[in-house]
Image (cartoon, rainbow, N blue to C red; front, side):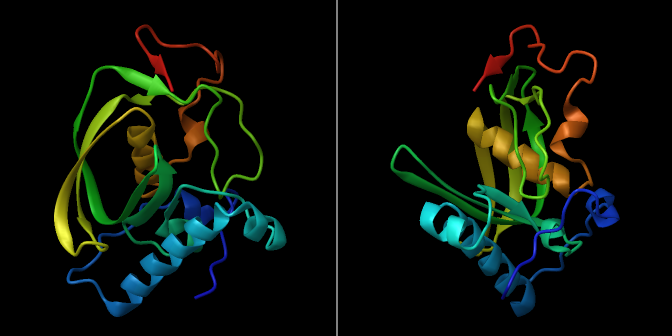
Amino acid sequence: MKLKIVKDNNPIMRKKSLPVELPLSSKDKELLDSMSEYLKLSQDDEYAEKHHITAGVGMAAIQVGVLKRMFVIYYERDNEVIQYQLVNPRIIESSVKKCALENGEGCLSVPNHHEGLVHRYYKIKMSAYDALTDEDIIISAMGYDAIVLQHEYDHLDGILYYDRINPNRPNEKLPGEELV
């Protein structure tokens, strides 16, 4: 399945995604598999350059024009692969402490860089159906992992990362906030 990334100026990116009916249809599973494959290939520098694609670590269905509450995550950290195909995710717990990526966030759907810190919860718990393992799971994540999950989760509600940057003080760190 060939995927085309929807850009942030497309009105669909501001829509709320709809819950996904379970058990998962073969069409939805195929889409999740294609999204995961896209992320894997995007992280191969040679492939990405040859096909003019940007490297990504997460992708929501809305970013390929599908208004469904599902997203995929794929990246390697400390010789470990972090990989999910999450359907109908919910943040069920979050910390008071905040964190942000030191150099700001990026997004496959946002071609222009937006300067500033994106303040997110340092720790979260997320419940979802994981189509990779075919089971309901609860993910406990902190720091970078929590940021990635929250970024993709925002897409399901039509929120883009730069909506969370303070326009008056874009690089101001919050008290007690950890920069990742």
